[in-house]
Image (tube, rainbow, N blue to C red):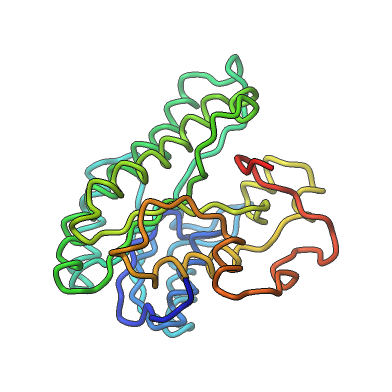
Amino acid sequence: MADTQTLKGKTLFITGASRGIGRAIALRAARDGANVAICAKTVEPHPKLPGTIHSVAKEIEAAGGHALAIQLDVRDADNITAAVEQCAAHFGGIDICVNNASAISLTPTMATPAKRFDLIFDCNVRGTFLVSQACIPHLLASAQQGRNPHILNLSPPMSMTPGWFEHYTAYTMSKYGMSMCTLGMSAEFRSQGIAVNSLWPRTSIATAAIEFNFPEEVMKASRNADIMADAAHCILTSDARTNSGNFFLDESVLRQAGVTDFERYAISPGTPLFTDLYVDP
């Protein structure tokens, strides 16, 4: 799955793109000269978290891409429709949809109130479904033009190992719901030329989600988001007609592409890495 193509001139609609993995994917595409809609809730600087849709837009332009900052709450269906249409009108279409926005709640059953349950399902499952649904008419047009359209969901390979459910049943259900979107939509749209895949990190990635939900030792045993961006680039430049319905791990994608040096992605080179959630031994 080597990079035989480029994202130059392609239009990407990326949710949760104001920081972390979404931002990294956006910047990797920008280096090719892509058009990128940075879609996220953060418009004003957060007191604890870096990045806004506007700061990332500036980074994309500086990297050689073309940016459009759109405030988006993936829980709002009307907001989703308006954001997708704004992107398509601005850039003349959409070729790639990246469902990166996600809410995390590593809580057991009795510590997951209805409000928290609704948040993770509205963001993770409903948001992924509705953003994909809104983008699909534009992706079908992209396919008809031979522009290699993709949907990429940042969600894990599905496993019925009880251990992944035992301590955070609701969150696991929500992330597997995103993966079920991959499973279903890849089959539904395969014959129409839209690829739908999932990508998940083999190790923890140094993002705000790790910083605020895990001990400091996990952050030090993580990789940076560039590994996910490079793996996403490999997937999004692959042939949509033949590469669909997969649940990829970042390291496996890059090894297949010929990458051998993974130390450059390490937050603390030489430190044993922390295997991410949902990655079976």
